[in-house]
Image (cartoon, rainbow, N blue to C red):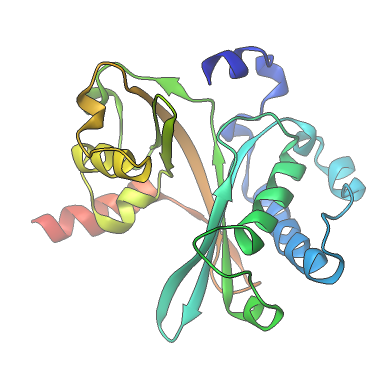
Length: 230
């Protein structure tokens, strides 16, 4: 993984600090459009030239995940989540392909149907370049980092917002990422396990196709999880 990222020049890769509300809003709209386009054409949409002209940053390479959540009454249910840990595609294309894969190619779910789209919230996770850690209990920060764990042929990733949703501490986060990789929850303690932290920035629709907001997951963690543990 590190070898692949080092082949890309830093200036070619999107920094999460470069992504503001305006750009993120346009990318989420393009993610929704990509799903709609695929429903009609069973293909990815062409490059959004107007978007690229207005926001040249979308031509940089980016690591992203698209998460789909379906509103079922007052609950949100995961409907798909797929993306790219390594920033080797232009940001616009990574968003489009992640949205389509999340909607139609996530093996955990049936493909999204047209009438479901009015009930699906789209969340965009922009990820930074991964950084290998030696002491994860000290180096990983809940509310800032996602985790990517690799051991042999097994690998698993959990996004920065996941531990906030469940109020995990760092040790639980590590164990759950091991499980996601198909490994024992203590795999992070083994010398041949590679552990990477991946800082991220999260934007989401408030309602299906509605207003978009920045998720301050560090604040969410303080308010939700610290309160529940006190």
